[in-house]
Length: 389
Image (tube, rainbow, N blue to C red; front, side):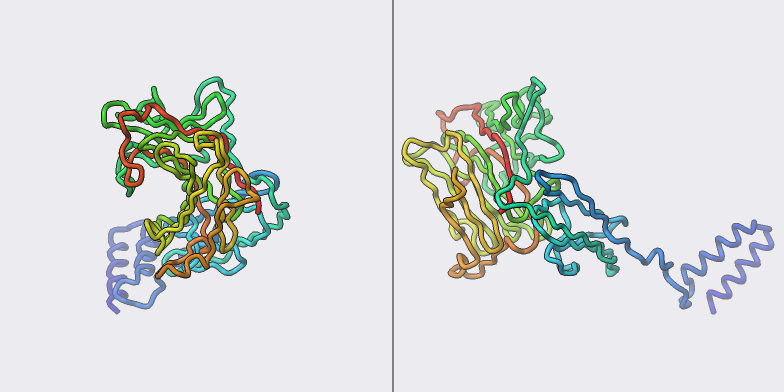
């Protein structure tokens, strides 16, 4: 009743001051929509209540594979998706980045805003791509005659000198960064005219170090397949080169719940035999409790030479190899966690993983550089590739 009285008085006031018909209609409708005074009028129109289904788009990768992107049409909505034909809910994977599809799967997606859920967007992919097919790569080609930026559609950067959880000593610099100690005159990451990605460790002054950490986070990700990096790494006290992957869901579940897959990782000077370590990390298996295995290079070889470092990722299994995918040197499975109290296998939760390439300096594992550590030094990467299993 209060609303009716207020409305009547307001309408009378409108008549007395000869407001326009349009103003009258606008004010009257405003009272009705807002439900002033506690009447039972509707709180929003049906159109306002609806949440539009996500849009699914694809871009070509290689040899029939595609990169899937999802987007919502309403501000504040979140997109959740599945790749196992199930209906997505708020408990499904939150969409964070475009992801590679190279197998026969059904992608389902919904947009959720508060408690409102859209209809399901569905696309069935029947790709029938043979095993061992190259489906995505960055070959770091450069025919410009000058050093260029790594492809900005694929690579972004971690930057700064936070120590990154390991008390590392370097400041990571992005391409184009010119705030000291970073310098465009001496970039820490670039694609050279030689067709290699260069990640350069510099020492601008005593005790000050710069380098680069590239990542595909938010731009490209993959779930399952054979991942491979052909690289040559520097070997000296304090150097910590790595090629690895983290789950897209690191933003929502944090590390280590997102899972970490270390494909190339070693520290310090060459040993005899020289080595690389392949590791996996998740809840209950990090640090000294982590799962890591050392690969010894054959006699006469070092990590300072060119090698392919690879991972074969299938449901329930992660294997690592060096140079020969037919002979992995270690395979981790869900049963590898059986003796680790509280360990949770994170690699089949539905998320895709993004790629990281970096050359750290110092930190808890290698310790600081020595007076004999050469600067500048660089990690070279010939290509990054993904094949079907």
